[in-house]
Image 1 (cartoon, helix red, strand yellow):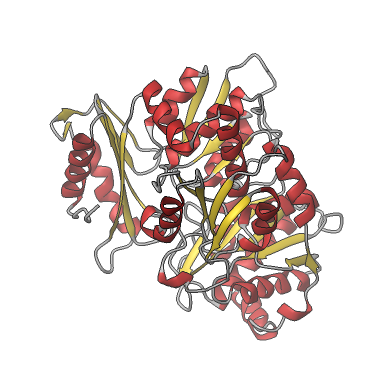
Image 2 (cartoon, rainbow, N blue to C red):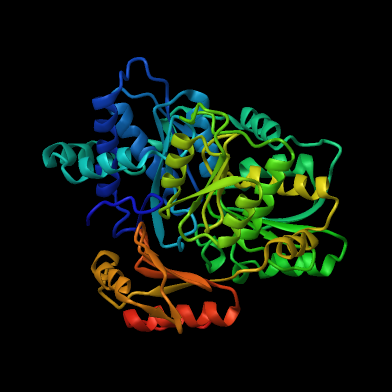
Length: 493
């Protein structure tokens, strides 16, 4: 199996792609990357984190043990931890990089590896590409020796640990500019993921928590993907709807870098609604500042916000209203991080639900997002549902749809990409003239009334279709048109 880090890390079915051999290949590739570019004698520790998936702690310890074999001071988180916490640990330790064993929001059968940089965000695309290359060029004799000497279960109990929980809490509260007299009523759903051990104590201290759902670790995540989508949050939505006391709901994905939000009526906010509210809040409250490691020194330059190419046009409208420039990047937070660092962006986010802030770190952090969202409600003095209505009253409502379609059996994403590229030949889409296209990531076609993006997943055998129109009918017609063109059928929405 080719080792690819896709849009957001390496992923594979446990026992097939996610294997001891592939983990060893990745570990050795990272070691080679580090030894080629850094003085490891002067480097601080390399932090390893892991989520609540099957074999995640053992896999993290296995990889960390390989690092220590080469004299690298690898340490393991003392509890399952969110990916943003691992990224913070890299920054706090001044570590050259960190490794998180997690498959994020993927189904329970998947395991994975994410890489974080010392600046506190997703490792740069060029570094990830180098590690991918090293993994596929591995010396087979060295690999065989490593596999003989290191057992998947052998290193976990003996590795030194790290815990940055108190320092992380302090930095998050500072970045959120949190008012300690404010105790909003909130229901929280941890989705059996890695957030409860780190986020839970902070939320219990700051909020009036009405109930905490799915708090315990479960490698099967209750039989669902740990992704905060409306269909996966029925219990949370039910609690909020029944309360009728102004409570809202917060949900964290499997590794705590994506946020789901339920308003006072039990309705889930779209990710572009969350991003738009947060953008207005950090700008209007004075929190917004260029990314600390940004390369833009001219403070008279317009502010920049970053969004993935799949994000709603609402983000661009809000940015323009605040005299900000929107910069689009391919899907995958490593591209958002790169743009935030190089451009000194104020914010960066993607359609899947993660947002990073220039005044903190170039990394999506669902805990910080949640606290900033609650602070926005307090500053505006509005219910969340009313804030969304006000948003559309000022900027208009684009109708956004997202479909994931399974590829035909035996067909991989790379094999399907030529069919996606053929979409560039379309002159008309759903009865409207195509006025432009973007092939930065998949194929994005624009019409006068909207746009549609088609791309293959970097981590699963899926075709992703995103469609937005001035009317829901147009958005649906566009999605059907491109699905028909590539020979697939939209699932029921």
